[in-house]
Amino acid sequence: MLCAGSAWAHPHIYDLSTNQEIAFEDLITDLASAQVVFIGELHDHEGHHRMQLEIIRALHERGRPIAIGLEMFQMDYQGALDRWVAGEIPENNFLLIYHQNWSLWPLYRPIFLYARDEGIPMVGLNIPREITRQVARHGFESLESEQLRDLDLTGFACIVDPAYEQFIRRALGMHNHGDNRSFTRFCEAQLLWDRAMANNTLAFLEEHPDHTVVVLAGSGHSWKYGIPTQLDNLAEIDYRVVLPEVPGRIDRLSASSDDTDYLWLDFGSDGWHVWNE
Image (tube, rainbow, N blue to C red):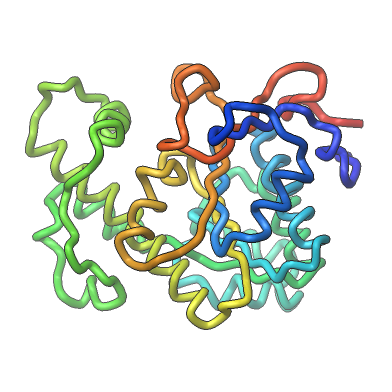
């Protein structure tokens, strides 16, 4: 079991603004001043979820009101999340709802249990899966007005930073000169996903302006070119991005403050790929 506070001894948090490692408590001091904190992940990496939980725990123990925003849950299931946090749904019953949204429960379970035990709101940020699938296959123009009623899509278009374009092309398995129509549709789906999660984060903050929303999402969405860019397009929000170092995707040699504010370097006996006993 992970000992409470063990992350405080972890020396490998890299601040991209200074290109230096900093202490965990210095990271938390900065994150506590932000309205939104994005923490990226590889969904099946157990250590990334331990990292997320320790940041959530440290912010909560500082007395900062927080909420946990989830890529993993669709907005239509918000009532179920509220009932989970309130302790009104037994775990076995909640699992039926959880698996309608996501998988890998053993990896996410400690975060969900901590939120329930501490009464920390959990917010479903995602849109129905069928909408993003439709856009990826048939384009944004195929959506009906009824499907768009809860989305603020002012100025929405597939216009992305070249670095994010390369990420999207890799996700699609395309080369630079792949089918442009397929790329545009996939790009629209990715940006719609990002925009919806930004919208839902803002909607929570409008009702709870004293909270910090800790957004748990895949590293591609959490990267500054993802949800944070869509957030910038919608409002002036003070946010921070924390990404795990992933060789071949983002690492201490290639990353800059344009990508993320902090990298969590996962190596050594005190890295997040092992339990800290």
